Image 1 (cartoon, rainbow, N blue to C red):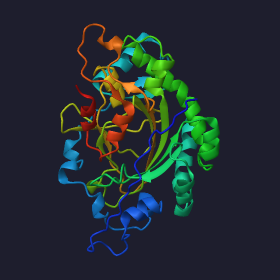
Image 2: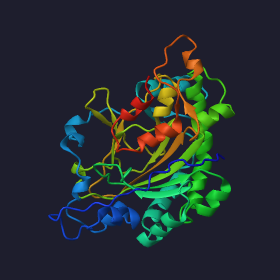
Image 3: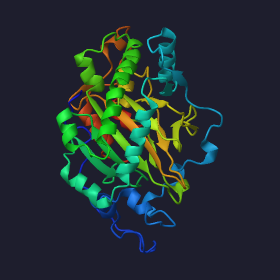
Image 4: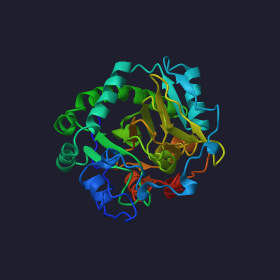
Length: 374
């Protein structure tokens, strides 16, 4: 099991902001205090049955996903992972990571019951009374457990319609002490299954970069930190105006995502202004390349923008595992990638600096990657 410190620590300077007096009287006056400090989150806001979303959630016109931007009858590859060490399977993964940056895998060895138990645990957690969730926030070390809403509410100009709980895959002692009892066993069981899968995926991706061994040093750089996130998107009265998650690419090496059957995930198409729907597939996991691996592969692999749209009538959940460099790692193009004389496209950067820059602002597409460019 991996030991991680100081990962996913977000600044705590969450300034309150007041709503326009023209909004419905039932909307909390101090929205950030209601959402964050009182731990009501968007779940608490949705429970008020407001006819409209507060203006802080309204995306500008250019930020909304209109149906005309969605490419019909196209989706990311689905790869059978049964024989993961078969050269043809590895070529399929390499092609998907190179051309799409996203793919789904089936027959990966994780039992469906583990998925179902975990999804039920996510719903149980977010249905807890706000007072219990507030107590968790106030009594959990943020390097192990963090509960918040939106993305980075202290820095965003527009809030996102999402609550999330992050569980850092730390020492067994810290997990047993601090992960919430209502979902601890299911989360830990899922992570124990997933860790073996993650290693297989990274071995395949590294092999195609001429890196044959995932040794301790490379493990520290590629997967020195793993964070399980419970994402909760309550039903939204005006989904056409908001983002569950605004367009962004992940800062990770890779992300492994378990979707429920509601749907709402879209990835950037080959044309700059198009989006491709990622349908839920029974028993599948969605895999995507993150910025860190794009940098380390010198752009052989691509991290692709994606976004989430909430549902008007149903609550959606998703459960990503963010597999990232250790917080104290340095990332840059791998020597093996440059050994044929390719010029590096990125400098060597401290992952902690890259990570902190990502959270210093709202989601803004692929702009974070510019931080590491030469």
